[in-house]
Image (cartoon, rainbow, N blue to C red; front, side, top):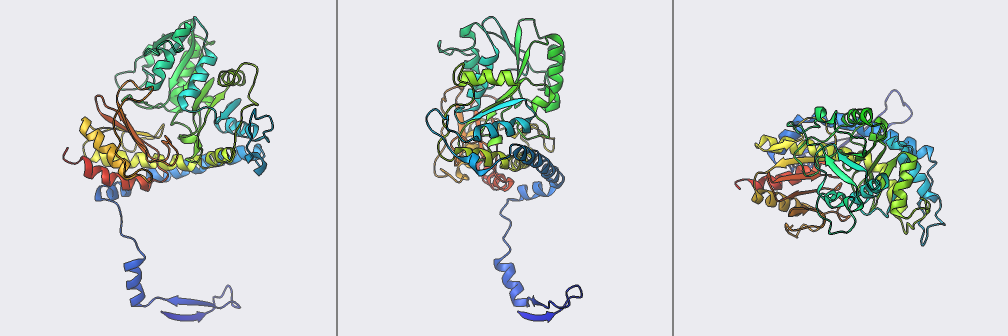
Amino acid sequence: MLSITCAFSAYPTHPVRISIPTTSTIRYASRFSVPINPFVPEVIEAVDSLNSEFRAVDNLVAYNTTRVLKAFHNARLGSHHFGGCTGYGHDETGGREALDQAFAEIVGAESAIVRSQFFSGTHAITCALFALLRPGDELLAVAGAPYDTLEEVIGKRDSGGLGSLQDFGVKYREVPLAEDGGLDWNELMHAVKPETKCALIQRSCGYSWRQSLSVNDIGRAIKIIKMQNPECSVMVDNCYGELVESIEPPMVGADLMAGSLIKNPGGTIAPCGGYVAGKKKLVEAAAARLSAPGLGVDCGSTPGDIMRAFFQGLFLSPQMVGEAIKGSFLIAEVLASKGYKVQPLPRVPRCDTVQAVQLGSRERLLAFCEAVQRSSPVGSYTKPIAGTTPGYASEVIFADGTFIDGSTSELSCDGPLREPFAVFCQGGTHWTQWGLVLGEVLKSIDGI
């Protein structure tokens, strides 16, 4: 290594010593400092072709981060908001109020309730539906069949008399999807009846082979619904959709929406929880279903460090969602190049963080999930087994070697063992996770 001392004209009184590497040090650096590309050729080629898509995602992340920061500033977030509480939670130090305020601003809602007591997205959605509907009312699902775990909530699948909406006298209809997998706009134009008191819009595809809905599509559907019955409330299942776009459903007229904190808005940090956001009166009604009428939103313990995790996760969520979107682009690009059907299609703008791939056989679906599990940071030595799971109609296989149980925003995939044997991939704290996983996936499904 040679050293030369010189002075730059801008700083003549501050000489700078520059080290110039010799041939031997360059050889050393090339051998030990520059890593060999760890990706398989198919992934390398896909990454090289996705530069413009990745840049667009980075711009989205920056924009949504400014929204989150502004909301935190307006809530005057301080470290005192991170304190936990016990028992009734009456001695809470203002964290609940600040979190609700910030969340409502981020999603463009009048009000929000963000709580650890919601133990899943299905739970939060259920509280919202029971808040909106009464005996004799009708619930209309406008995006085809809802996600499997809502079937027993609604009563579409027998709940065994445990208190589904239909058990309480709520009627149910659904508008089938159009042939192209999108909303059937012609059918929706005359689907809403005077007794329809709630229209349910599922933003993500769930376990259906269909397009997930953009916020603009949701806004268009809301206008059509309200034209037919202005008193019909619109409830959006927003799971996997938060911060994927620059706007959210309440900004286009949704009365209420709900989701999970161990998906997008938890930023892979939140250890549990869910949310309901929308019009203030309806949020209060959903809170009464979570707790009890009269108790309001200012109760319930949040012990330990959960509040800090909620705030930190929400701050990180634009970045984590961005990485998941990049991962979905990569999955679609690689698997489509191998001849598999993918939904969404490669390089198409995303409306949620789910990427579906039709694998065509039970064996490939199992092999795909096993490969993902082997590539996970937690439980890589375990083998996922398909089986019956509470809330699901079919056998389902899950691969989720995550630090937080069920945190699909970290990196996971799952799918029902039924035709067309599609796997649904979500999350990824960095797109390179999926880049590495795909190498193992291709090796596992090749030749099956």
